[in-house]
Every structure is written in C-alpha cells, then in structure tokens.
Image (cartoon, rainbow, N blue to C red):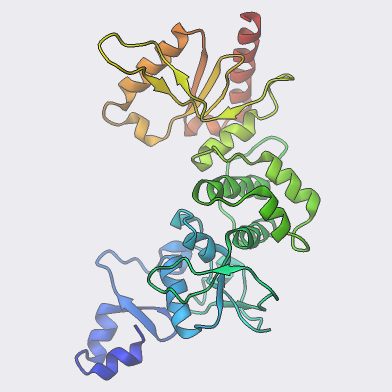
Length: 324
C-alpha cells in the first residue's frame, strides 16, 4: 500500500510504520516478514515481482519489462530478483541497468523509452491492469542485459564459450521451461536489438529439455563429443526391465542421452543424497547397465573439471561404438 494511505487511516502510527513495514518502492510499503533480510536479492531487499507491483502502483501507465516481466511469465524468481525493475514509459531514460549499480538505490526503478507497438500482456492476477512485456520481448531484454554484462551471475567454465554465453544459454533453457515462446518469436523480437549471428549461435546451443542450470552446463561441456550422425537428446525416456510384481514398467529419464548408442548422462543435484533417492539411483544404474547402456552420473564437483568430464564421456562413447 501507499505509505500515505496507511498513515491517513489513523490506525497506524509513524513508529508502527517504521517498525512493521518495509519500503519496496518510493512511498510504497509492505508488511515486513519475520525473516526479512535487507541485504537479500542482490541488495534490493525484496523479490523482483513484489518490487514490480509496487512500482506499478506509482507508475500505472508504465510497462514492466526485463527480468521482472520474465518473472511474471513464470521464470523461477531467483533469476531476476537481483535485477532492477525496468519500466517502459514515454521517452524517459533514467537509472542504470547494471544490477550491482542499481542496487545502490533499490527503491528507484530504471526507466527506458516505450518502444512503439510493443507487444504486451497482463499476466498478473493481483494487478490485472498492469501491462507486462510479452514473453519474446522480455526474453530479448533479459538476453541483452546478460550479453552486455548488465546482469550476470557466477557460472562454470565451459570450453570455447564465454561466461556471458553460458549464462545466456542457461536463461534460454530456463525460460523455455516456463513459457511457450518459440525461437522464431525470439528472433523476431530481437530484430535490431541483438546481433543475428550471436543470437543464432545461442539459440542453437539452447535446449528446451534442460531442467536446471547445472544440466545446461553439463550439456554444453559435452556438446561436441558425439561423432556424426549422432545427437544428444534431453530427457529421453528409457523403459527398464519389467518388474513381475507390478503392472507397470519402471522407466527413467536421463538428463542427456544418445538412444542410438545407449549412452545416458545424469546430473545429480543435492536431493540425490537424501532419503531413498540414493537407492533409486543405484537401482536405475544397474538396470540400465543390464540393458547395455553406458551410464555416467555427474555432480556439481564434476562440473568444475570439464576436461575430466569430457574424458569420461569420450571413453563411454568409444565403448558404445565398439559394442554396436
């Protein structure tokens, strides 16, 4: 709510406002959560969606763009929570799109001119009049900030790829998981904004099946190891040996694989060390081996050593070729 509106009600004192509410935009406050950390989200204090809604209250005619638009379309919140709120309105230009610089003034949005004929939608149920850049437009705006170093994060080293390219592919994979946006729509929205050659390269490296940034890194590290005409596929389905005690066939979905050569790669996140998951992974490994599959399970420590990863996969490919 507007701070002035709360104060005008007369039920909340100035002291109560200072103690129990936190500003998320100029003059707009929300109740302070018990676990609130002012330094969270890259220094912005609150998640990007909350900050976007607060700035909509102040600037109802502006269009929400960039990372907060991507969040509104379903992108997992932590991607853009450390980015400034981008408002597209009129011909105004103020504020820095460099996330670390914008965090020095977390209550100020960034203003950029509203492009003519900008495609928008209204995906927010709480604020049905709030205009948001359409998914292809939001994707291009986010890619621009990544490729120009305005918004970035730590990523693993990948042979023959720059860090911002790895981040861009991670974003494209994640955005494909939460929207129906197509590559052609992104290309159209990127006209005059991103170099065609760079965008074509990034889209060629992206994969709609990757379900985590770490899976993306794993795929990028081994992307060029298969000989022609074989290709990696994400989330392939493999039926395991039928279980006579059940009426269904157990199956597994390797994160990356080559069905023709029977090679299955998995990325095991932290949850694979919890509860019964270790036993499930063990049983799947041996079931696949019984079916003649080469199986490699990687963890986050493996991603720090891409050369060793590539060696393991090359050896698996050689064994698979000999067994054909």
